[in-house]
Image (cartoon, rainbow, N blue to C red; front, side, top):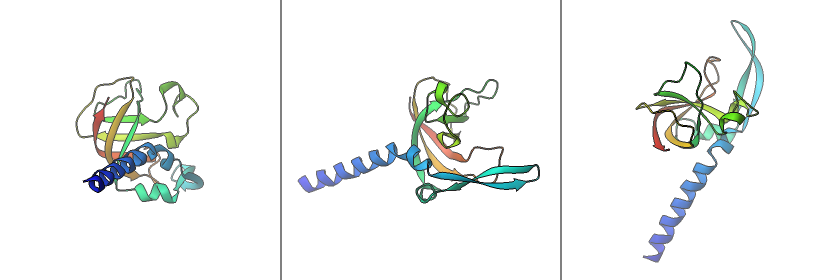
Length: 141
């Protein structure tokens, strides 16, 4: 019985550790100059830790970024940083935000939220963010 509790505890600790390191693991990215039909652009080159997460279900916590006139309850932008520090408004880099495609619509909140979904890495479409969470659901607010 003690062994079983120890194993359950270690699994829970491992899951919590993984969850806390999602944004850190997403920060392993560099950029190279590429070209598309409109000219030069910076293309992400993902590190090994980030590549290992591709296609896997992950959990990420952060803040919903309200784009004026663009907030869609089923397609949100999640930032690891609060609004004043986020990539679009402050000092964060592009590795601190992700697009989240939700299965069910959510209401905007300024509080920290947690989502779970399948991570897709975007290296080709400059109209999208480089991290996209698909088939996602809101876990907590």
